[in-house]
Every structure is written in structure tokens, then in C-alpha cells.
Amino acid sequence: MSRPERTPPDLPGVLAQIANVAGEEAAVAIAEAVGGTQVYIPPVPDADHWMSRLVGHKAALAIADRLTLGVGGIRLDMPSGPSGYAAKTRQKVDRMIAAGRSERDIALATGYTGRGVRKRRRLSRERDARQPRLI
Image (tube, rainbow, N blue to C red; front, side, top):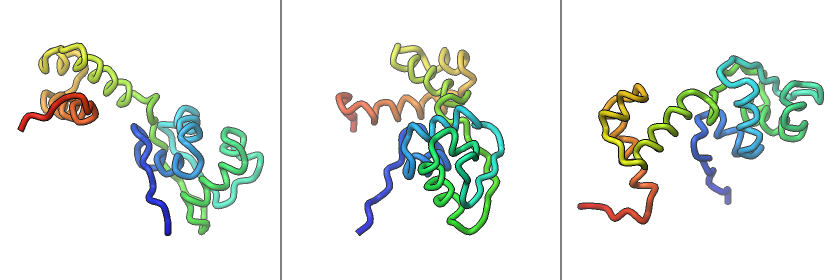
């Protein structure tokens, strides 16, 4: 029986896949090193490949196998992950929500729409189990 995959928080698409096979630390290291660029992942990276040097050869082999399915190399647009602009903006919005700032103030300060602020506020309430739900 296979175990369901866990999606690491704040890791989009391909970074979540990397985290599932090589750990969240490896995914974040890759995002910080090459996030926002297009990279080539061979089906079997050698020990001198950039990814092997960055996260270790064993992890690089696991990542390549997962992303290429062992068939052939692939070019991917690597997301920036938690160190990227979008993640930092979400963190700023979340801090402003926690500080009790108004939807309008948050939208003007961050470039978010009012609808986006309401969505982040709703998500923050769902994450906080101490906050009672109003029905």
C-alpha cells in the first residue's frame, strides 16, 4: 500500500515534487540557486552535475527520476519558491492581517487586490485552530 504524498507548505508544483523525494531543504536550496530560470534536468545526472553538487548525488538521482520518469531529459521553469517575490509579498500580507490592518491599507501597501486580501485573511483563520468559526 503506497503512502499518500504530503505537499510541503508554500512550495509550488515542481518544488513540492522535489521535496517529496529529496526533502524540503533540497527543494528550497534548488529554488534559491536556480529559481526563476529554466533548467535542464537529465534523466541520470552525473556526480558533477549542478544539482548533484547542490543537494548531493543520491538526492539528484531521485529528483531526476521523479521529474523525468527515467525517460529523457526535461527543461523546466523552476519556481522561485519561498524566497521569491510572491512568497515575500504573501508573508507581508499575512503580517499585516495579523496586525489588524484594514483590507484597504493592505491592498495599497502590497499591490494585492481587496479580494486577494480577503482570501488570505480567510486562509489565515482556517490555519488558526484557536479561532472559532462563525456559522
